[in-house]
Amino acid sequence: MKGHRYAGDALMLGTALLMGSSYPFAKDVLTVMSPLMYSASRYLIAALFLFAVLALRRRPMALSRRDWVPMILLSIIGVTIFQACWGLAMARSAPSVGSIVMTTTTAFSAILAWFAGRRLSVLGWAGIVVAFAGVVLVVNNSLSSFTLSFGSLDGTLLWMVSAFAWALYVERGAPYSQRLGALQVMAWTTLLGSLILLPFALFFDSLGEFARLDDRLLGFWLYTAIFPVGVAFLGLTAGLERLGVSRVMVYMYLIPVAGVGLSAAFFSDPLTAARVIGGLIVLLGVILTRVALDRAARVPV
Image 1 (cartoon, rainbow, N blue to C red):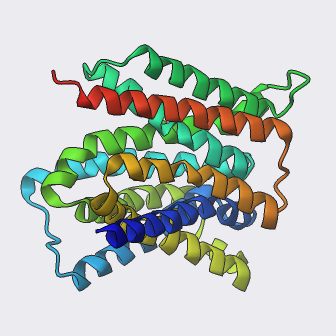
Image 2: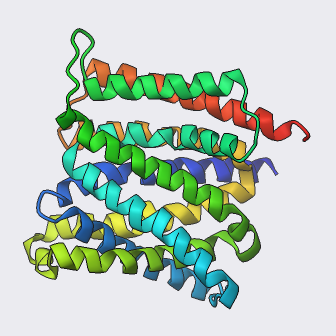
Image 3: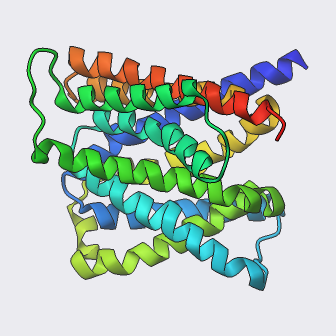
């Protein structure tokens, strides 16, 4: 049993690193590829990968008629909007900023839970305020002066829309994941969401953009399509089975650490004191919010 748990811990460590690695790799690809084309194409490849895994595991793939409309709506929220904003935000800001701001997904989840009638304690609200205060410091990127402007907020607002869309997708998709299986829901929403986004990408951009990718950038594009999405999601579902939600969430806090570290070490993304301190404040707020949510879940209603 202990070995089973340690295997889950190792699996989640690798999953968090994979998820965090998408930020710096994507930034390099987006120097020559438009955000919408990048997001639509890589998620289409990720969907094909997930369906291949379903086939190898001999899991059911077909959707019943009653599930088509919910899957399409989930696809629009969790892939089309989420990935469109993710790509546009990445093109406008540093990858370290994105990996930090995206952790506010937990804060948005708490707000959605509150709107749904779930009581949120003072600790939870304090965590939300702390998390967003940390985001302000990360974006300001200075400990001595106020540097915020509309230009600096442009990418950050897109990151926050992306974080909200992912939180809404997870909340609304939970009942379907329990009934149909998380892998099937992820495969279908990834496929449908990428197919909905693709016409918009083709309207504004062109498939000819792939000709601009050299071997290195083509490798980065393929890597971000398969590993941080497809393989990482498989690791996430396996980790949930072995460790449970609360323990898995601890490893999710390593995603911005991986994103910031890889960006600074290999992609020349400046690691400033303001971003480090701001990132730690965001993580503190997210952890406080997560603790409050876990406590609320244990209180009978």
